Image 1 (cartoon, helix red, strand yellow):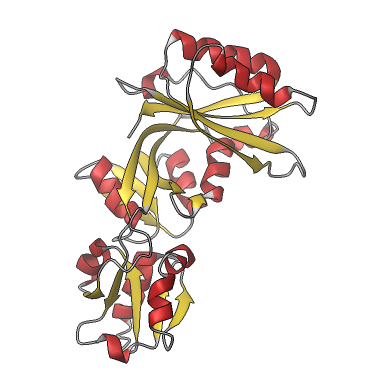
Image 2 (cartoon, helix red, strand yellow):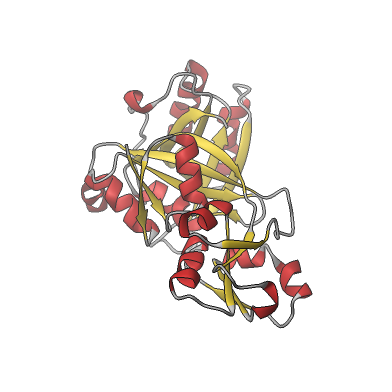
Length: 290
């Protein structure tokens, strides 16, 4: 199976993809939107994307793309994020003057830079990409911060392992599939009004017990209370709720909710009820909880 990821081979997304789909063929993409484009064109059969980190929060661009595009979440995976300082063979820690990595990774290794104030933190587009760049260019005064798999992928040397500040650092990844519909037709509709998408039965895995949705409420008193009551009335537990600005609609917001039920009668009734009180509802996926 060909699986698209954002970033280079050796990235955490690469590791998550191989854990979720062993023996898959990973297709690296430079940008997140390219991942979704490849999926909708049918160039790949699936994609693996990070959606939330325990320290940095939600990956906003991916949350927006899940609403805007015709894709469906089939699985989730929680990956422990361990950052390593990786350089070209022969380079030692004393020689370093720069360390490259994704801005989120740099921010999660603040204590390392406090201890080594002569080393500059340099933002780069990807964790594994920073290691690839440092080694390909034989940089003698620089290193990258990435996972262990990046060192193996590019024959790098781990100078220090586990340099992240917080060991309780996990990222939640989604395995997503295309629904067979082009996002071009979606754009001809109002992207802010996706349909209620509960008809992807073939994409729901056996044993699914978790659902992710997005919805917008009307700007009237009690609208959010009424929306959430459809779950409370049926004893459905919400594991997450947050809001995001709606693209192209200033000062309007989309609510993202995860609840702990699969495709059963109570969940279907709750979604139908929600459809009556919300501006729109989109089921982003129904899958087994990690």
